[in-house]
Length: 104
Image 1 (cartoon, one colour):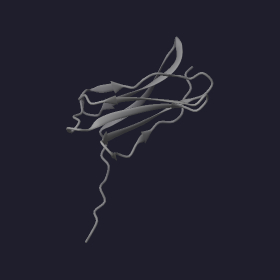
Image 2 (tube, rainbow, N blue to C red):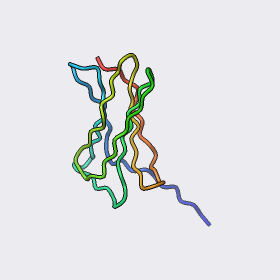
Image 3 (cartoon, helix red, strand yellow):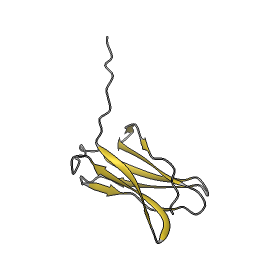
Image 4 (cartoon, rainbow, N blue to C red):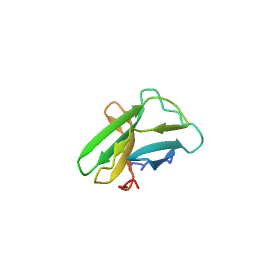
C-alpha cells in the first residue's frame, strides 16, 4: 500500500485590518479567484486571539462569498493574530495563522 501526500492548495489570503480611530484589529479573508465555493457541510472559521489580556473570539461563515470579515478584537495592551481554517464537523484543514500585530 502506498500513501500519496496531498499538497495543500491556496484558496485565499488573510489580511489583518485596523482603523485609524480605534485600537482594534479584524481579519478579512479574500478568495484568490473572486468568490470561493464552500463544499456542502463545510465552514470558514476565523478566530481572533489577543495575548494580553488573553481573549479569543470566533466567527463562522457558511456563505460563499468574495471575502469574509471576522470579529474585531481590541489591542488594549497586546497584539492580536488570526487563526483561519475550514471545518466539516470534526474534520479541520491546517490553519493559516497571521503574525501578532498591534493597531496604531
